Amino acid sequence: MPSHPISQGSRSLESNDNNDDDDENDRNHKQRKCAILILSTMRQSDGQKSVGQAAMIKSVVLIVLCLQNSVFTLLRRYSLGILQEGYSKHEVLLLSEVIKMVFSAGVISKSLPENTTLKQHLRYLTQKSGKMAVLALIYGLMNILSFVSLQNIGAGIFTIFAQCKILTTALCSTMMLRRRYSWARWRALFALMLGVLLFSEPIWNTGEASVREGGNAVVGVVAVLIEVTLSGFASIYFEKVIKNDPEQLGIWERNFQLALGSFPIYFAFIIYDDPDFDSAGAGWSPVALTLSLLGAAGGLLVALSIKYADAILKTLAVTGAIVVSSVLDHYMLGGPLTPFMMIAGAQVIIAICNYTFDSTPVGDTAAPKESTSSGKPIVDDEEMAPLTKK
Image (cartoon, rainbow, N blue to C red; front, side, top):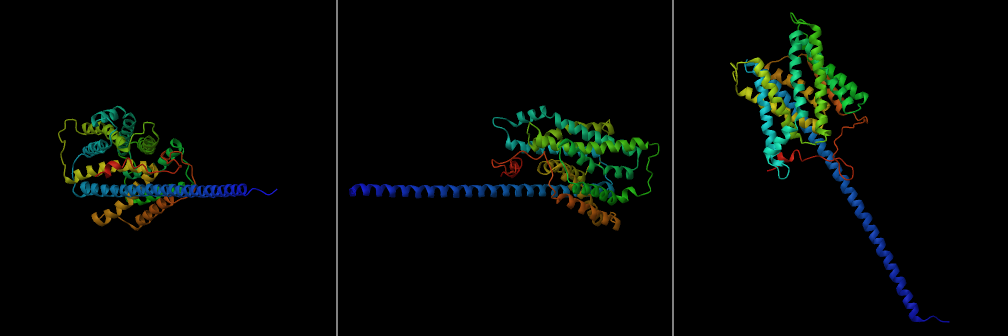
């Protein structure tokens, strides 16, 4: 029986509608895939930009720290060695801590928590400053141990043992932060320690007696070994508090707490040196004031380098400053720079490069926790934002 023409037309229309729906679904599916691909590419690009920005910040902070240490060392030698100025070094350090407190408080004031005044927040930071007070006490104890050591052994022997702080920092990092370093990096650290030791040859190869008259060699060596151990512990302790502490206080807040804890310690040293304050403020000059400013800048840069890099890289930057400052000292102040020192300086630079550019995969459980929703690391710009606001 022949089919009805109207029925055939209806089926034809239905078939065309179904084809149109399929085409529409295909277009929607392709558009969704395209959108997902674009979004994924954008996220990957953002992640790469964030990693690049983090690397740039880390490099800048470490380079500036190296230059700050170099200029500070050179200016201190000019002040004490050339000008023979007689100010108290503890007064210089005390003023540095005051400058750090004031500067940190100024930065904190630009990023206060909601409905909180600066006075309230600083009071809160003071109440929560126990961990930084421990660090300040460690730094104070290190000063005392240096004094005890140099009272018993010569400066040359002290310098030799003092280079062990490079290794103690790495050892404390493996124990406290559970980091693992490749053998190439361990070899680089040993080479760096030996390079710095050889570079310091004019200090320890002077024919000076190894033991001070009336001193005790055992007491002197034990004191300096305890000091270098505390130095490594303090660096890693600071890094752990900054990166992993549950309170998650900012770098400027930690700087304020550390300066606050250091203030009474340096004040106690001043009282010990001059109980009656007969020579308080004596010998001060524009150079001494500049040293205080540079010292404060150094303290802030150390904290930033630990936040954006780590304690080992901070140590490498400070170690590299030894070479830079000695070269500047030679050309500007007539300091020694023998062929032996130049070879040792090259060894230091090579060791720093070997450590920095070693790409052997290592475990690191102390990495910053910040990440994007896609798992890509990000740069925490909140710490630096108050400094860049107009």
